[in-house]
Image 1 (cartoon, rainbow, N blue to C red):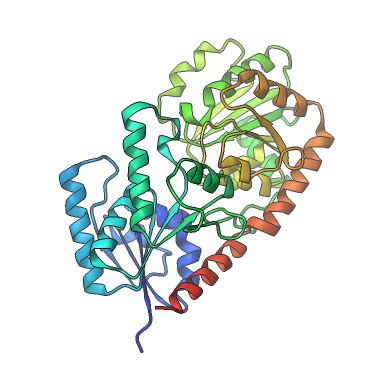
Image 2 (cartoon, rainbow, N blue to C red):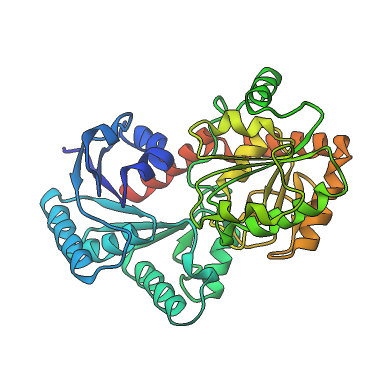
Length: 380
């Protein structure tokens, strides 16, 4: 009897590398696992334990001709391979896979929602993008969501139904590698020395794409106010500058090289985050907030907004504090509360790491995925 076949569909191989590597490895023990997407070179697939792969030009920009071509190429591939299940990640891959899987009549079609671009949009574009998510939900046989607050939001918005959608465990698409994200005093001292941050500084660290939706402008404004009063604070920004935010740094009078560093993209978040004392993510929207649980795993207390999605990554008053979305004043108050209270930072940090160990360790999340697939495929 042939092994049952699963195909994951992504826009780029990096999605599989970042979020699916351990899931694929666990699933490959009992199933043949394939990958389809805009894969340009086999080198992009290193460390992925897959049976085979197929290049399908799934591109992020909307293009009716290119997107339809991708749908028909993928549906042809699905029919040829006779997959038992297909599973998409990210919106564009989700749309292409949903249409292709429906056309090819794949028995099990899964999409996982990990955030909504349209949540902060208005007008026609919001309607279009939201309608596409509704179509994805309708055409798939099963829907996963990587957090309960995001699931509730999607139900309220009429995108998914409660009976069809599921959150595995406590949420998160891949959890945190507990071995990799292991707090170390030696690493903290070394990375601060590398970055030129004095040990007596209280460092707020942000990690994410630098854009409006992540609340970076509110963060800069709140920090600018803090720095005018307290000379021991420091702000470290990690991530790609998507909206040329760096060009605005000069507008903040108290932000200088003595108390601020924009590092850029890092391939070692487990090291760079340890330079911080407090993790801050005042986001407008979030699928779950992987960076929050990564920081918490390193023992950092967290300040997040009260936006849906990120609510699942922390617990107010237990692992960190919450500010209001888009509210500089409430963010400032949260930041000020943790500056001079090292004891509270320690309590929040310890509780956060313990919570990640119990609910969001990568091994826990992988186990939930494997159990889910075993149950689904037992009926095919």
